[in-house]
Structure formats: structure tokens, C-alpha cells
Amino acid sequence: MQKIILIFLTACLLSFILGCSKTEQKEVSNTNENEMENTTGENDSAVDNEDPEEKEEETNEETKASEEEKEEEPEQDPGLTVYRPEVGSIKKFSDGEDIVLTEEVIASNDQYVQLSLTLGGNQSIQIYEWTAERISLVYEEVSVADSKQNILDSFTPKNDSEILLSVNGESSMWEVKESGAKLELSVGSYEEVYVLQKVTDEVQGEDTIYTRYYAPGVGLIKEEFEVTGEYGYTGEMEVATMENKEE
Image 1: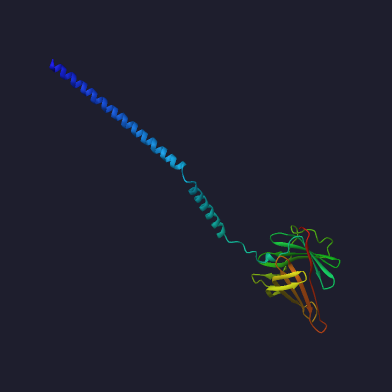
Image 2: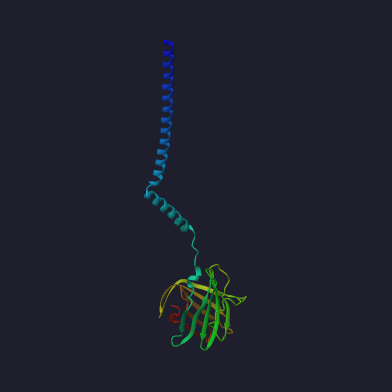
């Protein structure tokens, strides 16, 4: 009888121990799951709660870096294009008494500038290659019926272009007598003026000297000429009025 009671007590004790073991395993499992959920929640919260000021600083730094890259890109030197007259500008030149020449800028593109010239009753077309590196007369047509027709897309440059000014030292009949000059005219004061000069033998046995003045944003503002010799003479014309019909 005692032996039966002992076996019964041993069985009860084993059942109790096994039950406790399963409960502990379940609690440990639940604890681990809760810890994982808490960790995930904390990470999500950390992302959601990121400091807005830090985000703004990062954005500003990226913008600043992008702007610095743009600033590092070299700007193209405008060169002699600074001396181009504007499309639509009309200049009237006087010899001191009368208007002797009217110049109007008809059209321009990246390479050329087309001018209409009226001298007395005669109309002419001149087209200049006017780039950062040079100014040269590449087309001229005199005594035309309509000098204000835009022909930039259809004209053919002449082979023997006349170079007035070149920053690359190209051979030219024109010589730079002065750069950065100052000039006072009745229409205003000009600085950084180019003074160009050409000598020809168009009068037999004598020299004919032409001197031109070019100002930034205006182009030609004055021209002088002189014929040397015993019967030589001089003359000049300069801008008397300026306007822009497109403004």
C-alpha cells in the first residue's frame, strides 16, 4: 500500500514539474516577441521623429554644393560682342552741320550683324562677322532698293573679308591705335573706346587715312578721314542722335 502511494506522489510531482517548464518556455517566448516589437517600434519612432532642422541642414548643404559646382563652371568671355550695337538702334551721323549718314541695325545672330546705311539718297547693306574674337566686314551691297530687308539667312560672305579688329592678331589693314580710350561727344561720354586706323592709296600719290571709334553697346560712334599732300583735306562725322525703335 505504501508503495502505491509513493508511485502516485512521484507521478504528481513529475506532472507539476513538466507543467512549470512549459509555462516558463511560453513566457520566455512571449517576452522575446514583445522585445522584438518594442525594438521595431523604437526604430520606426526614431525615423519618424528625425529632427526637421537636421533634414533642412542636409537639404541646404546639397543645394549649396550644387550652386558651388555651377559657380566653378567658367563663364564665356563676351569679348568684342560687347561693342555690338543693338538690333533696332538707329544712329544719325553729322558732319557738324548736316546729317550725312544714317545707320540702322536690321538683324543679328550669334555670328553676324546686318546694317542698313543711307548716305544721301543711296542705300547700302553691310554685314559684319561680329564675334567675341573679331569684327570683320564680310558682305557689302551698294545702291540697293531696300536696305532694310533681312538677308542674314540667305547671303553669301565674300572671300576677301575686311578685318577691322581681331583679338587673335589676325592680319588686317586696320591698326589698333588705342584701346580703353575716353571720348566726349554731344550725345554723351564714352569709355573703353577702341580707336582703329587704316591708310589707303586710293588717291594717287597721296595717303588717305581713316580713323574709327567704337564704343561698348553702340558700335561706331565717330569717323575721321584725312587726305595728305599739297591739296589734302580732312573731314569727320560723329553720332548726333541715337534711338531704338524696338524699345
